[in-house]
Length: 241
Ligand SMILES: Nc1ncnc2c1ncn2[C@@H]1O[C@H](COP(=O)(O)OP(=O)(O)OP(=O)(O)O)[C@@H](O)[C@H]1O
Ligand SMILES: [Mg+2]
Image (cartoon, rainbow, N blue to C red; front, side, top):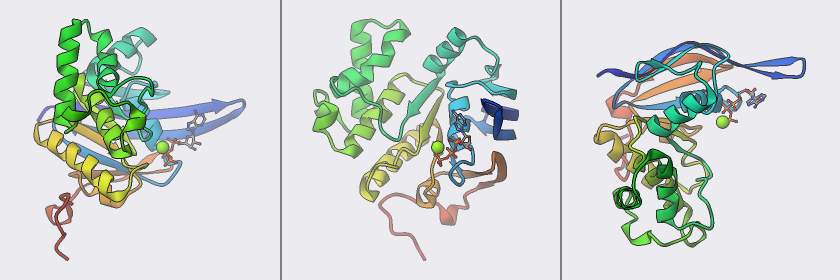
């Protein structure tokens, strides 16, 4: 499979007054199309910093980031926003839904920047909500849905843009274990249809739903390993001991 993501000596240093925080100290890895990868590591190890760079929400201090073969790390703000909007679907721990909008309107909103007609946007949003099992919740506002349902709206919003990559930072972090499993099941379904998915998580159970785990520590990759098939978690199935 071709590579979707490649980082070379990727670095991010935050400057706070006279103090420098070396959040990422030179990462090298590639992710192929259709892979489902977890990024793990202790608090402060650089996971969110990395995901923000991969999601074009931030720029590296040094090194290179290729997304779909294109170097994006040095682009202007507008060009970077355009890449982000076309190629990236982001799923947030706290869902980031607008409370006054319905599920359908929340999913439609980012499509406004895609140059689609109103009816095309509507169709895409309806299809995405159906894909996450929420076809009966179009007109519900976030407050009228459970956390798990809100997160599924978050996934639908990411999906509706038909991105090259879906990035999720602790997507199950605010959910109980059953709703968390539902969200991971959804990611697995998307993965089976060929989506590339990168999930940041503290939770090894969550990470074991993926096929590869990259461990960070102090801003560096300390291991990057395939999950052996006998350790992979399939939601809803009791694991053999
Ligand atoms: N905007 C910022 N300004 C300065 N330092 C920052 C900033 N964001 C993160 N850092 C620092 O960079 C390092 C990596 O932070 P990051 O948020 O990437 O960690 P993390 O692995 O996501 O942690 P957690 O598991 O707690 O979410 C930490 O030392 C953090 O304090
Ligand atoms: Mg974080």
